Amino acid sequence: MLRGIAAYVRRHHIALLALFFALGGTAVAASNSLLPKNSVGSAQVINGSLQKKDLAGKAVKALKGNKGARGIPGAAGPQGPQGPAGAAGAAGAPGAAGAPGTARAYAYVSGGATPSLNAGLTKNFTAVQHVGVGDYCLTPAAGITPTTTSPSVTVDWSASSGSDLLAFWRSAGAGCTAGKFEVLTYNLASARTDNVAFTIVVP
Image 1 (cartoon, rainbow, N blue to C red):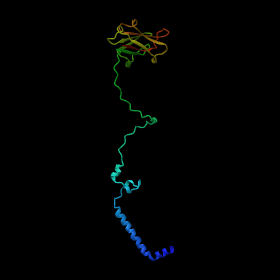
Image 2 (tube, rainbow, N blue to C red; image 1 turned 60 degrees about the vertical axis):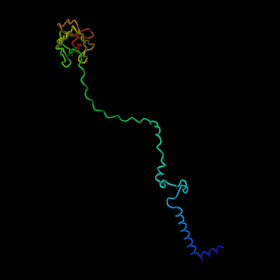
Image 3 (spheres, rainbow, N blue to C red; image 1 turned 120 degrees about the horizontal axis):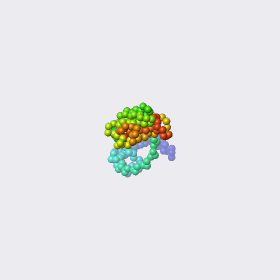
Image 4 (tube, helix red, strand yellow; image 1 turned 120 degrees about the vertical axis):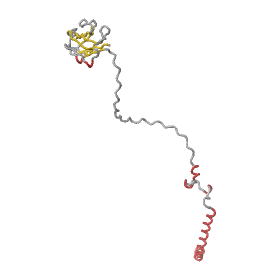
């Protein structure tokens, strides 16, 4: 049987080739006439076979839904390491001058047998006199009298010599003339001494 088929093909191969090409062209023509351009519908598409580029612009837009609600904030992260110290700032402007003090008079007395007033630390005292060991008379400016005020007297340890030193105001002013402030300087042995520098303040 196979020999008969082979003999038939040899005798009619030209006719068979012509028939093959004729049928092929008819199939192509039939496919073109049955499926015109842009005629494929959903029924002809295999599920999952189309790509984004195969879709129309409207179809692509339709795939995008509305923007969802904003999610809740996440938990705060751990605190970062402390940064380096910043550079020192510029010095500020000088502050306003303070109000003048309320003391009516004050003086710094150097002590010793020839005492003197420190001009930079003295106000409304004009002179100091050494009238005896550890006994000083200070002359105030006009309007300041020992009978109408109660001054404060303190020892300046930096300019004094010795230890256990004291300075007192004597209100009676027995060793000074009227109108002057009398200051006595002592050590704790109850002996007067000239080795005491002191300040006096009249409020």
